[in-house]
Amino acid sequence: MIDLPLCQAIRETLSPDFPGVFIGVPHEPASITIPACILNLSGDSVVGGPLVRGSLEVTVMTSSNEYTTEQHAQLVRDVAEAVRDVVVDSEVVQLYGVVPSSTKSETDGNHFQTILTFIVGYGPTES
Image (tube, rainbow, N blue to C red; front, top):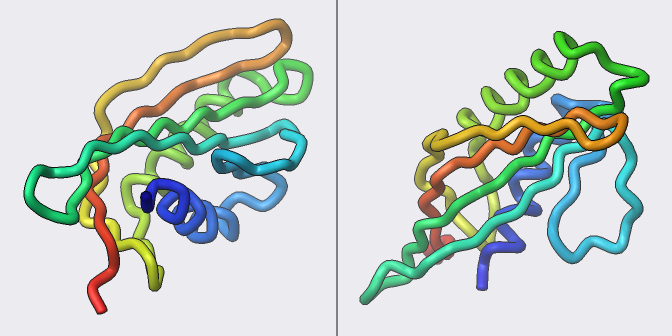
């Protein structure tokens, strides 16, 4: 599957714009540090072809001890905009489009957490 390579390519694209923010992908053996953006992707193959329609969840987490509600909201807006505008340059996977679909905000202990969900279209890079 090409879900993990897409998450890795999105992380590589986002990382320079968010110094100091941990950007995690599935199956990564690293400890999560806050602030963080965690990428998770699930996809369904389009019948009869290599294209995939997926759901990309981007969980933005900050510490309420270090971020105000307004600062958290600004980080969420910045991440959402960056994900909507992401362009993937990969030898493995090609991203065809990103459409925002939902958000969910939570407070967990002393952490602010917002889950941004996007519909993404992707497939293998044509050679």
